[in-house]
Image (cartoon, rainbow, N blue to C red; front, side):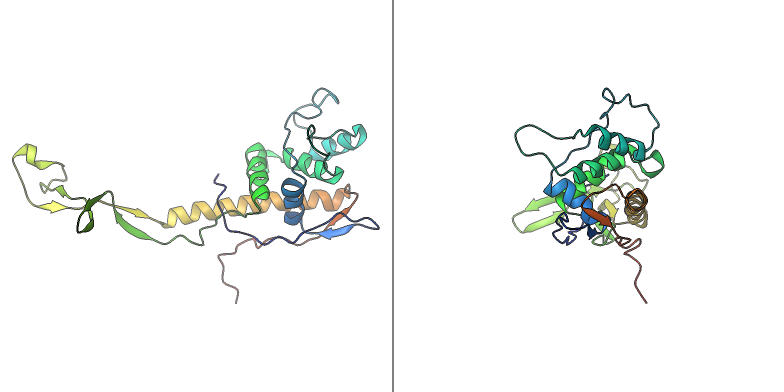
Length: 221
């Protein structure tokens, strides 16, 4: 999965002191990975709590709260406990939501404050396979055509003219692939949102129901 994507304006969020700060799930993820700089740890609690494969993210989060351990450490201040819980939840994404591959993708995007590229800048084009530079400018590379679809035909002693081989970019299949990536990312965010809204494990934040658009390529009526 590509990390490249569109810049997404994320407001600065701060942990609440007198009460919990309302926060959207994506804002919370950016705060945890970008501001608090937490890291994923897929093997956390394996030795300290006897973690077993297949346990839910809620179980891991509860164990982390009981142990009081953190993901990062050394050389700087410890991250906020809520940021640790966020990293734990992302690390434990179920396979149905993309598993570890999706977790890494979400963390990388959140650190950069970017959302996936769903194809907003993709334009269908037909371009030459190769270019040649000339003092007059740049020209498409030509191949000798023998009428049978073979290159180079001068070896066969036949020359029916020249043609320029081309490649198509920005195809419908490419746009569909990028949109599927967006939908998978959005579904993983929804899973994390539900986890925090039902669990209420965060001490300084209250996750709202605000989400990025599920299909930004659809024009609103």
